[in-house]
Length: 323
Image (cartoon, rainbow, N blue to C red; front, side, top):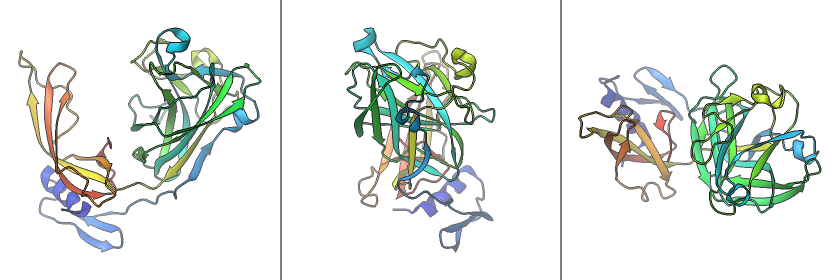
């Protein structure tokens, strides 16, 4: 089985860059590829907390709230799908380990599943439309708190992720929302204060359940009618180190055209791409040797993708999103 070092070499040969050069080790954890030195970035230690605004509910200082969940059958008779994000700053690379989230609910029972996602800042104090990483977790610890502002039932959820949502240092918008359509049917509101901290929070409809905000693109909550400065949400994020995962290299992409001959308009992979999947605590023995699948395209076509296993290691930055 090849190492991640040979993965980098294979990728270079595949795409035709540095095709006549091979990587050499320049020092501990430092590699030279085609004359460029790649130094792995530093990582947070497990449990390092890089953001905490839970005092909003601890001190009962919130003044309003936004719907933020994919749930709600028991309250509204059908599921609603609303998203709400707040900005954070990662000084170093981060793999989300634990996300703690406060919601104001009707039943107070909490949820069994959460979605955690990070959206990069587009440079204008707003999130990109597509998430840089997202994951779902059913490993959720539930506690309650008093809601003396609106008289609802406060639920604090501690979401332990699988460590697959990793991003380099920078400005991001974080989303931690209940994701339980058609199950317990409760609904959650994000409690927010009126203190201006960094960028404004943003909201949109998720596009799966019933809409609520009337927009499928991110809109500043201040300009949407909630008042300028209504920024922070009750949230805590802890980072942990990345974990070794099965890494594959795409060696074949075949376009499967429609009956009318239309080719795929948006295949997410090209030959040479690296893809990481599940964790591999046994050094790759628990990794499949090959991945095969079809990716649907927006125009009805599809692309067939085949990728071969190249190792079990910490995913490099040029790896496609871990799944």
